[in-house]
Length: 342
Ligand SMILES: CC1=C(CCC(=O)O)c2cc3nc(cc4[nH]c(cc5[nH]c(cc1n2)c(C)c5CCC(=O)O)c(CCC(=O)O)c4C)C(CCC(=O)O)=C3C
Ligand SMILES: [Fe+2]
Image 1 (cartoon, rainbow, N blue to C red):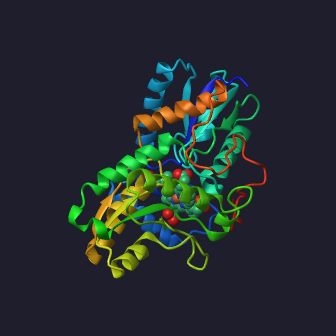
Image 2: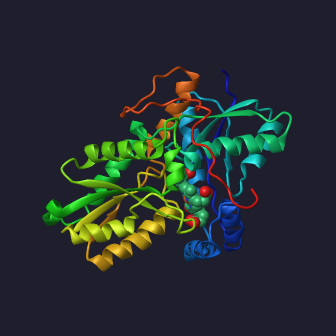
Image 3: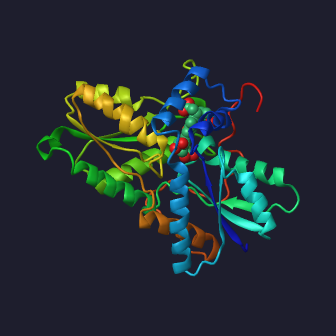
């Protein structure tokens, strides 16, 4: 297969207060998210002036990838399109068609399997291509990378750096807390061809980061940023509840590492740097939040490596043992049942 472009696929976020509500309506269309939750989440964005950092993080990543491509003799032109906010993927695909692109490799800013993290990006591609119509380029998504050293090692270094800010005299009662975005239990059950893949990959990533960063410390994987109606079960425990349990067990300090994410977007800087930090303060816990890969050169080089797996037959670099594939099996990670109009 010959590819003639690279496209960064991401979630998108508002960059002006007026964009917050339209963005949130795009995210939650047909999802059964209660109106009160939407208003609450809007406040998180207004707290930062209505600007999510995620779009700038995508620009920064793409700029770094371009430099790394050039250094590795990869001449692919680069594009960027989002699921929920400008630049919308359909507009990007139209531009690619106008530029004469026929077949592109897509890199999504999520390391994991599951509907929201993987399948929905395939759906975004299909919907964008359908909207553009004849002449729309083919786009295939690069593989999931939860155990790639270019993802694991930056997380591990960040855990070490966060740990170094805590009181070394309390190391014996310090704990690592890995977090990822909660998803509905039903979505977790159908992640991957045999189910449970989102949680299994996160367990593997957390274990790899723990082993590389601080194998002497106990650790847990918990969940953050739950939404949806309360009667629908989502993965638990929530990070805030978990901190309460830890404090009750004699833990004095925590390093919180958001291994579920690739950059410090709003769900990190609000849900962890504000909410969970406040929870820890209330409980008297020492608290340090580990950074995400962002534009760490190893993470940027990983993107190049994933491209070279496809274009140059480079062997996949992997630290874990779960199976991976380039093209997702057709039956995995189906869309959840929707309420209302799509
Ligand atoms: C697994 C997963 C990831 C990680 C994988 C990936 O990165 O793709 C992720 C990332 C993100 N989620 C984000 C924001 C939001 N997610 C929401 C809602 C939801 N997320 C879900 C799952 C995930 N989400 C789910 C199952 C829902 C319910 C509605 C639905 O089924 O879609 C809502 C609605 C309001 C609310 O929070 O209730 C918002 C605003 C942002 C942008 C942050 C910024 O602006 O900087 C990012 C990167
Ligand atoms: Fe989300």
